[in-house]
Image 1 (cartoon, rainbow, N blue to C red):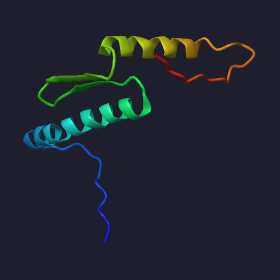
Image 2 (cartoon, rainbow, N blue to C red; image 1 turned 120 degrees about the vertical axis):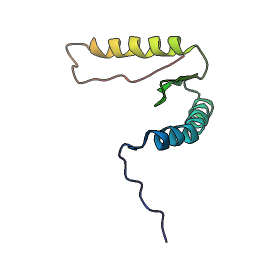
Image 3 (cartoon, rainbow, N blue to C red; image 1 turned 180 degrees about the vertical axis):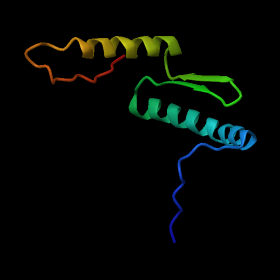
Length: 94
């Protein structure tokens, strides 16, 4: 007997949606921290609740620093060399 698959669709009832968010928020923060520690990566997480509250998480640096690192790396990907236009470098180091 297996688990039933959760259908991914918006929860229409605002109260149920807020309750679901509140229950799952701590889990995703914990998983983000686990990923950062186990894989030695920088993780930045920014969430807006259905009520409009902001939750942010950053593994090592400030969230702004992690976002700037990601934006700089994305800019480098756009500046690919003309001789290798399909080459992608997706390495984030700290």
